[in-house]
Amino acid sequence: METIELKANIRKESGKGPARRLREEGLIPAVFYSPGTETIPLTVNSSDLIKSLRTGSGESSFIKLTIEDGDSKTEKLSIMKELQINPLSRNLLHADFYEIRMDHQLTMDIPIRLTGQAIGIEAGGDLQFSKRNLRLSALPSLFPDFIEVDISELEIGDSVKVGDVVLGEGIEILDPSNVMIAAVVVTRVAVVEVAEEVEELPEGEGEETGEEPGKGTTE
Image (cartoon, rainbow, N blue to C red; front, side, top):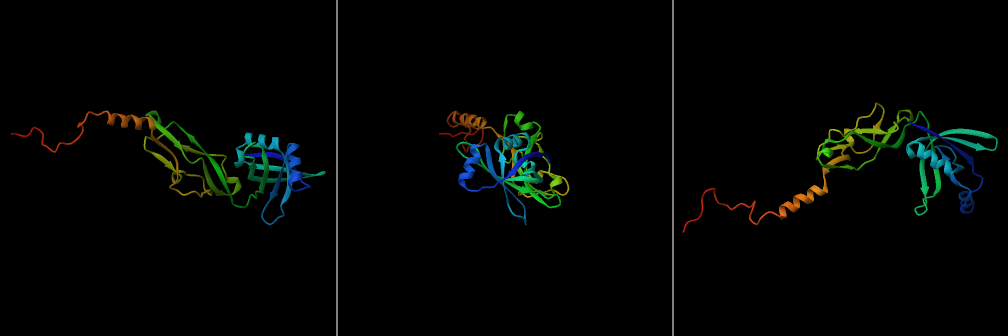
């Protein structure tokens, strides 16, 4: 799993007023926590956090926090547990970091990458990519950066489901096996064209008369 680095500082103040001032200075309030320990209030640079998430695998990356408190520094390995964003301005509001322990099972959503060109697409089908992450449980050292799913053999009407994905030993997929990841379907254009062809058939064509071939009625 890719690890990105991020600097943080101990936050001395809390509340809406200090949080607003931090954001005006280009910082955002954050917290760091782990089971059985007290939550540590932090500040992180908003631009540095955005840059880190863009260069890494987004919120699926491991984050090595260097926490500064005056002259002392502490390094903590973590994941982004929650990132609050203003829905209108898209500015970052708050971040939660959760400590990773290498000898403890971890649950994470890992992105899916489709590989290959489906046969059905070349035949005129349309690809539906409906599930873009898999929820995995494993030791931190076993997590991949992403999961490759080969779709090259999919024809029109075929699909690949969660149960079709095979991962390494020690990695458990928590999503239901019958959930569809991707499928190749008939395009909407093709469906419309078929419907139009049916509508244009001459009246009576294609209908059964109930008479045997070669026989008619006589007066």
